[in-house]
Amino acid sequence: MADAAPRLQSLFAQMLEAPLPVRIRAWDGSQAGPPGAPTLVVRNRRALRRLLWKPGELGLARAWVAGDLDIEGDLYAALDLLAGLVWERGEDARTLSQALREPEVRAAVRGLVRLAGSPLPPAPPREEIRKPRRHLHTKRTDRRAISHHYDVGNDFYEIVLGPSMVYSCAYWPSPDATLEQAQRDKLELVCRKLALSPGQRLLDVGCGWGSMAVHAAREHGAHVVGVTLSQEQAAYARKRVADQGLTDKVEIRVQDYRDVRDGPYDAISSIGMAEHVGADRYLEYAADLYDLLRPGGRLLNHQIGRRPRRDEDAYHVDAFIDSYVFPDGELQPVGTTVTQLERAGFEVRDVESLREHYGLTLRHWVDRLDAGWQRAVLLTGPGRARVWRLYMAASAVAFERNRIGVNQVLAVRTPESGASAMPLRARTWGAPGRG
Image (tube, rainbow, N blue to C red; front, side, top):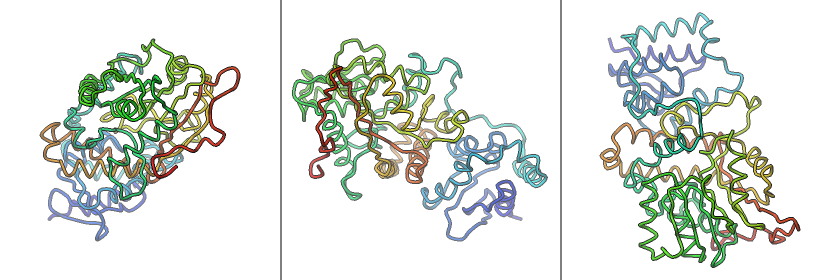
């Protein structure tokens, strides 16, 4: 009798103390759950063993990456429905050990063990990074983490990011704009906030594939130094610079920002890089950038932030993100970022949230990945492609549900005279047509 799906629905409801809001289709062809809801496809019993050995997010992620689990229907709707059960249980949610003290939960676990079969733990998918838990955010471990994330291959990133090759939140004039237009508007917004003018020196920290460096040099006449830890990014960026005829204005280095010694710069852009710095190193990061700016110089820090918790000591990076996507990445509340910049000596002059813009950006990236799926799988393998699809779709839902946000913080190294050179009405910047 094909009854695995109804049994799973019942067992999960017992464990979660709530009905599973999606349908289940099991390996034996059985189905159960709300009609019309997205379907969680449990392809084999190994998926259950992954959940039993690593309950919660990491077990689900391993099953997804390995292809043991899939979702049919609207991926965003499924993730939205599951968010309250997997990611948003709340600070007062019981731990697994607490839950297992209850007879109903223990009985549900025993039922899953019977369904799962062999008790041996499945090996994690090969895409999972193995890393030491000590000495985080040294130059060596940062190079390793950046290589894991960014050296997936430039051809793969071209599929996802499109011609702009900008891997950070776009700035949308309207929901029906193109991704390329919105990314150009974001780069222009950064340049205007920094008040770039011909001949000024710009340091672009975490320069990626050179999009900001090329835009600042071509459109504003700036002389740009871009630094990255990724060899693949640097090679790609240098070719773009040469193709644009900007080698006299742009230099791309494979260099840690902590090793930059040729200041002062008139402006610094840090776009989507500070998430890699780490909480323990953030004040050092801010102080290093402060020292690299001339008095009156501006910093534009564009960074993902999380919502604050009542118990900040209890914060942990999402297990899936840490194991498969951004090793050693850490998100802090925007208030913490502002405080650390001020402690380093900066005067913070403007903070702008672009949270909704990132949800829209990620949906466009997922659309591009889906459209180029077969080539992406050929370039990276099915496991890595599945990592990226889940990561970007789940991140879109997280931005839309206000679990995380993204903020542009404009700060000035104000001279001792107090003359910041900021206009009285600072928010006169913006992409063309918006002011």
